[in-house]
Length: 604
Ligand code: AGP
Image (tube, rainbow, N blue to C red; front, side, top):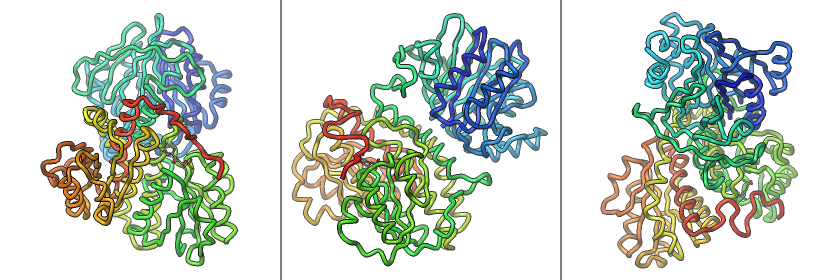
């Protein structure tokens, strides 16, 4: 995750920007930079590596001035080099700091080069810089220039821009990546989160998706996506500088649900090569005969979805095992040569011990973790990292969808290496993954769509989640979320399995939540849910937009944007998480620390 900061009207802008970057260093530290735009002249200092390297550069070569922007980078498109360090500049006309993915950067870059622009980095961000260089030359003011640029780009982004043509102003915009404005005395600030500005102000405005605007030292003008004035609430941020902040959300879980577009964007960047393909370093692992996936809880549900992708895209035999069961069965592993441990914390002892057992049996081990310096990361032969950032809420949300993004990308890469998936098909999967931040941002509408149904669900004693194909493990995950957060007993079932017994549970008013997407299972999955409705169940469907046409006279249908069925399990996770979150809030349970639970179960 990258961190963005800005300051306008402060007598020593570079100093407060550096302090703010220090508070954002947890978001990434491949490179950092600051640009001061004093009286219009733009001047920048950048450095590769930890933020302290930038501090040394600034000490030797200070940047005086009252307006500026800064960035701490976690490499997305383009390696961690000085050329790719933000702020990215177009001559001395424009400087940009950006967090997210500009999905259509390739086509925009081609057009800009045709119009004579010279690129100096291999970042997607640089297209923003050149688009702004064009816009500030053609538009009457910085707000119009910003709107003009936003009309050309697609993707998840939060950015801040200074331009020589419009001194004493900073342009900002956000879509799916967080951005906040801090209101100071005679100065105003920008930050990826409230904590960044904690030493300057606690009066914070959190921008909403689609918001953009221009700030000066004594004015903040925000617009909504449709260009109308956006009146955003000023909140008092917590006075806990230095800690991970809730950033104005009621719970860490709510914040982390909203962070998923950004978490996916940065996880995708972790597995994306400079040429736009996948960059998994697997050595001869591509030749493996078979893989066992070892995990617990939500991570095991991710493993079960990963199995579908590994088998269908890479023709790789995969078995998934509940870690705490695996080693006590003396399992036969002669048909396997790789064990993958999937763990957000990288510390779950069940998973760690299962991996140690697999290693003793001679299997190569791979850890898919969200904590780079965790025990599982240190003990496995290979590591894959999700870049979801710190996950404080005990219920896994952003780490789950980030795990899925890596598993799908890995399946596509293995499919290519094993000669069963074409380069074009792999590229389509990569593009579908890159569209997720934007689609997930749109799926946050589920908060409003689901809220009216929560009081009824909160009264339930029991609940069924149904899914078919890849959505069966998602049904398990939806049930786990509802159980662990709201303490309502919930079961996830393969839709086709319901008629082999669980159908006896169906009675008038029993909540049945069916997950659907436009895949080959849809007709049968609809039949299964109608069997439940015919017996009095209160059915809620969570589905992709166009799928709802296949579902007649169902009272409650929650939709997410249409997407390729291959990524539907990732996108449909959002409403499933929101449903459990809102139910728990309604019931007044301890959402971030549910009873009896722990974020990382470090005992067997
Ligand atoms: C999921 O919401 C729970 N927090 C829990 O099931 C968790 O997924 C499980 O304990 C595994 O944790 P890990 O991913 O850190 O190994």
